[in-house]
Length: 452
Image 1: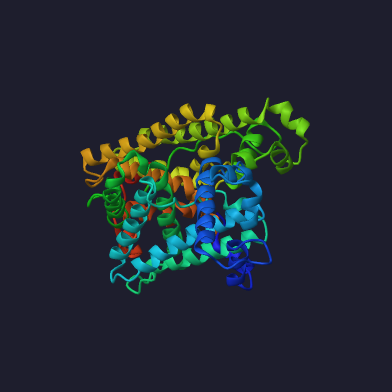
Image 2: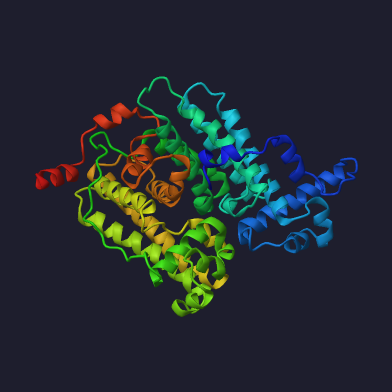
């Protein structure tokens, strides 16, 4: 998702008019908005959301949507002439649902209660969707594949929602909280919320509110035990393959960026080649086919995460040290010249044959973060909390760190961990001055003394 700083200037002059364009039939002679008409339109939106979430924007056709609701394609085009109009309507509807949750939650007095309320409402919605009582929310992973004028409308609406959520951090009590801090923490919360959708189905829908409580507890209270402070161990410099020239690594990085932006089906051979300014012939000189390249992109991401996790485990004394070091290094990697990692959302559009082992590897690497959390609880460096939920949350913020440059202008690989990861570890409402005053971790002290 692109950030507010880029897209707010592109917002349409009349948002209400733009919404009307995508939320009403394409015919110029509109019939009276009957109950039956509205029910059919909502049924089309519900079906489209499910298909977009399952197959991605590029992998879904209007014919697919029509078939899923027992209509012919022309019946769908009466409501939404083009697929992008339909996708835009689905996205705007989902953003509006989130806006409603935020508006309701902001009625609470204390920031902590507001955050709890948002997460309760959000997980209640996910539970209703899982039970079939309500339509699902649409994933925002393919937003960047939209073109004008739909992109301006969706990003303008999303940015407005982001600004309202940022109201959680308009705190007079913390003069050290800059706009960059507020934007990074808002993106952190949204990243955790989006991530919840990918793993909450491990639980029964009736337990989703309990999940919301545990996520809230970690966001508000952080991960740190009383004696632990933010000071990630600086890991030994790792060597990554160069992607500067036309090489297998260059194709992997180019494909990863495009898949993150446009989904599996949107990252065509032509687009991957064009990004490197080479021909399709050059692509096939280095790669047998697109599916093999995508599989290699996942393996590249898994290899980076494994290497960082192993280095973190070898260079710290506590579970807290290991978790801080691994998270910080991976957040930095996301914004480096070698990054990014492949987004979790790319998994949903993979061909069925590629999903099984890929999903198992993703889960194993996420649970290694959980092992660090358990180690920390045993050695006293991490407070008692749900290690599985914490692991998923860490994995989610690493996954979404690639978008930080859109939301926090001027952020760098060096500053990213402090602005973005530290609030999860220390608590999103912990005053900056207080967080900075915490003692450094033992491994950090040891590293500093050794270098001195």
